[in-house]
Structure formats: C-alpha cells, structure tokens
Length: 384
Image 1 (cartoon, rainbow, N blue to C red):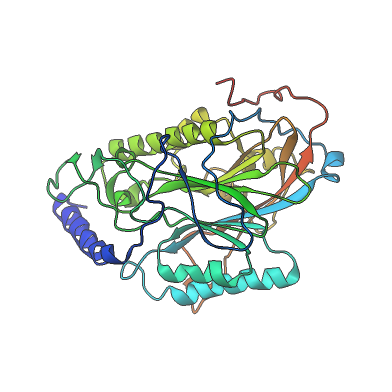
Image 2: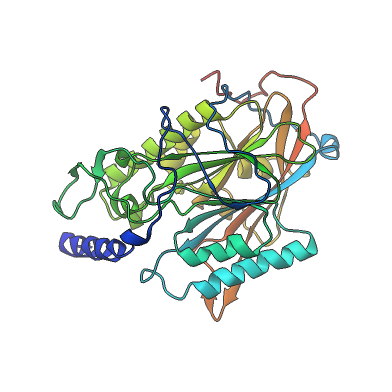
C-alpha cells in the first residue's frame, strides 16, 4: 500500500467516525487516583455496588490437578468471542448476524449447555446489544465508552502529519472499547483501565481500547473469580509502521501486568480476549511479562484430563490464533481447563457470523488443600 493511499484511507476512516462522535455517551467520568476506574453495568439484576478498592497482590499460580480431584470441583464455561461488530459503513447489515449469534446462545441455554460467562470484543455497533439483551444473562457489564478517561500521549497516527508519528495534544476516540462481559452469576465488583494514548498505533487509536474485569461469585467457590476481557492493538490492520505497532502492544501488555498486580487478589483468574499475539515476538513478550498459564498449552499437555473438541484443530487454540485464554490459580483454589472448542462456525445466507471464531473453555475449579507453594515451573506475581 502506498503512503498516499494510506493517508487517504486514514482520512476516510476519520470522517466516518466523526459522524459517530456526537452519539457516544460518557461512561465513567471520574478516574480514581490509581488510573483504574470502577465500571458501570449496562443492565443487571441484584448486582452489588461496584467497588474501586485495590486488592492485595495476587497469589501464586497453581494448576496441578489430578483427574480424581476434578470430580470434586466446580465447572465454569467461559466463551470469548470477537464478533466483528464494526460500525456502519465499515461493516454493513450486521444486525442479522448478531441476532443469529444470540439465537445460538438462547438455544444452548434452553439445552442447559450455555457458557456461564461470555466475553465479547469488537461490539462497537449499537445493535450488538442484542446479544447482551436477549440471551438470558442476568448480569451484563459494558466496557469503557468513547469518552472514558484516556491520558494524552504521543503514539497517534494523525492525518496532519501523514508521514510519521507526532505529538497529539488532544487525543480523539471515536468509538468505545467494544467490550462486554455477560454472566449468569452475580458480578460483585468491576474495574477497567483504558489504555493511555501512547499505548495504541494506527487505526486502533480511533477506539478507546481497554481492560475490563468482573469479579464473579461462582456457586461452590468461596471467593469471587476474576474474569478479565481485553482487545489488544492489531498488527497489519492497524496500518502503521511495525515498530510503533509492536511498541504499542508491549505497552498494553505492561499495563495488563500492572492492572493484575493492583487488582487481582487471592482468587483464581481467567484472562481471555483478542490479544493479537499470533506474531511470535508479541506472544513471547506477553508470556515473559505475565505469569499466566496458556490454557491451550495446559490442555494439550494433559491428555486424559482435558479434551479438545474433535472439530477443533490444535493450531486454532494454540499459537495460530489471536484469540486466547490464560489463567492463574490461587493458594486456595486450583484451576484447570478440561474442554476446549472453537465454535460459532455457522453461516447466515452465506456470510460468516464474524471474521473470528468463538473460543470456549470449560474450566474446573477445585479447592487446594495440599500446598501453598508454587507448582514446578509455575511463576507467581509476588515472585516477579
């Protein structure tokens, strides 16, 4: 792509999003001193007041679970799904696709097989609320909107320069984070952190990308489970110089590490979303920075304890995907993936529902009565 065409494309997109500017509603107007903000729910039934309390440092990662222990644990199915809900005219006629996604989830609920927690990314289009509103999830958390706090920074691709990155004194966000967390179980605390303006590159700077966390009370588990949803900077589709795109991704990874140190306490945590880590150097930096377990690595390395759906190739859950699941246990609870599947492969009138597949993992959460020491080869937040 020539620089001239790239500049024209950026200006076109800027114009498209400018029309959306006036319609975005403010979402959490007052940041707390730490830069982490309490999030509000879109709609919820009997949700406790959402707190901004900073939790102690997270506990040790523990994942060693035997098949015998799994029988005593609690099952939790978590679906992560980038629904490709770009606003019109970037993607048109998406409402029927959202309705079909919602229909699939409703059918599974009627069968009793629905994921108890759903994480959505790229739910930018307002009609994406169909999925949140019609699928029976009692607790729905919407991520930061367009006007949520985003500090001034320098890593913006701006049409005024066209040739390079430059200082942008008043960063503009044309759409929100596109994040949702849907839950069958009560959300008792919610937090988010918007990526600062020097943590994005290219077209990704137009959206207010963020980290969204819900602490969820799962029946049979005595502490809330922290569920984190995020969408990191893209690579090629950002249409920006590779060194700036990679640096933006590193800064987002560093921010997630900081966020978890601040807010994830002595509870199991599941971290899922579109992390855009298919590029090896991105994945390696992510894993070196965050002491999390890759759910696919753990599942594929424990045959007999965890099962990969027969219609899901290993590459689709392991490294040849930007959609990922990670997790950490705690001193009191072990967490283990026991089933994985890439789903939502259906089509509607010859159209794919999204340019991504769903990534669903069933976890088994079991009490850890044996030891509080780190398992062999595992890291902990406090030891880093």
